[in-house]
Length: 387
Picture 1 (cartoon, rainbow, N blue to C red):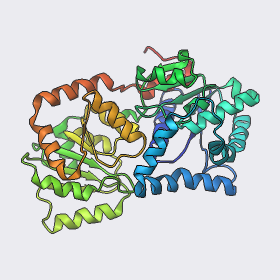
Picture 2 (tube, rainbow, N blue to C red):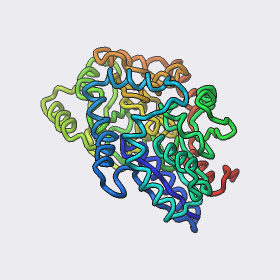
Picture 3 (cartoon, rainbow, N blue to C red):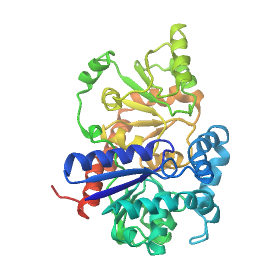
Picture 4 (cartoon, one colour):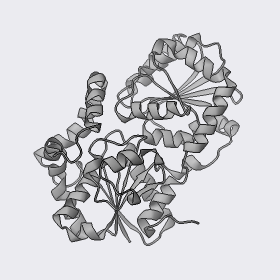
């Protein structure tokens, strides 16, 4: 059994889903052979592909960091574009530079199944099928809606066999974009299976070396510093609630240094533990009572699998804002609309037990902890295993 995984590196969420699927398949099915390909980083390094890689990665981060209002406005415009309108700019910039290499991989690897971790991958597989590529036609092609929203250009990948969604709430949108709803299967957003494993809160805190009995806020920053975490931490000095903060800065060395300096100068009044890039996010989530930060689909899935409530930070790009809107409408998250009033949101979170109870109930409705298993089985078996 051969499985081809097509991904891109923008934001790392797509790669994270790809690893989750790959690990599940390898651990479960011993005869599986997996090949993972980045649409823009692998294959021939042509000038057009290098440009596409920059636009998908560096260009994306630059745009949302310095022109987020423009970026989000354009994103919303693309979502309501005319169905079946020719996406000449998209095809010229992102599909044509990658499609020849992907067709070569498909013809040489001859996959039995293809997992498309990004919209562009699904478009490429659709185009190869329309072109008449026999290996693309023979493979079972599965794509995933990786946020609580349907991304622009989804209408261009309707020739896949299955479109996996995190909720049934998007059926009207998918139907309007030309999908046969028989292809839609609601399984969730795949993440590493370790996020579905229960770790005792006290034991997790012991492992991290933090206060075992104190309420704990986990903060996560994206690599380009969305949301001004340092300013947010300082604002939480005003909180009446007693808690400690565990801040995961990832590869954002500037933020880590800034927080450490503020801590050393005594400007942060709450106990704070600052980490850089870590491999134990699942343990930190188990130790926490609430997560504050970015709110991508993968991050939501990881947190909800850990039964962890979310307070979304103010500066949210693209789908992350739509994720917040979706969850907030269902009382499944809180939102810091103004950094200056973050302390009020946090105090209210810890003090309003009824609201917190409703939030936890909604999380249980939304979470799909078996997503990686179910999608892996779908790829391998063509159906979701009942075992």
